[in-house]
Length: 216
Image (cartoon, rainbow, N blue to C red):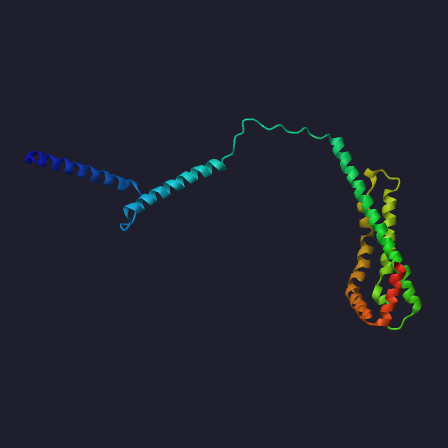
C-alpha cells in the first residue's frame, strides 16, 4: 500500500521483463527460424520432434556400429579332409547308380511299348491307323538309350569311383541325343492330336485297348 513499495515493486517487474526479453532474444539467435503463425505449443512440439529425431539417430548409429564381442565362440573342430572326401565320393557313387538304374527302367518301358504295342499294330495293318505317325521315331530313341546305358556301364564297370568319368559319356553322345530327341519332340503334339482322334473312333480305340491289356 505504500507508494515507495509500489515503485520498488514496479522496478522489479520491469527488470524481470527486461531479462526475459534479453533471454528470448538470445534464444531466437540460436533456435531454428519458425513462421510467425506458429504457436507456443507448436514450438514445444517442434523441439520435442527434433529431440526425438536426434535420439533415434544416435540409437541407429549405435545399432549400425560393429559389435565388439569380448569372447569368441568356440568353433567346432574341422572335419578331417579324408572323411569329407570319402563322404562326397560315396554320394557321387549313389548318384551314378541312380542315373544308370533310371536309364535301365526307361529302356525297359520302351522295349515293352515296341514289343506289345507298336509291332502288333503294324502286323494288323489297320486302315486309317498311322503307327509311325503316332509313335514317331521311338524305336530310334530306344536304340540311343541302349547305347547311352552301354557307355555308362563301360565307364563304371571294374573302374574305381575316382576314375569313373561320367561327363565324357554325355559329351560323346551329345550330338546323337540332340538329333534324335529333336525329331521326337517336334512330332509330339501331332501324335497327341492323332491319339485323341483315334480314341473317338470305337474300332480304332478297341485296338488300343487290346494293346493296353497285353501290357497289363
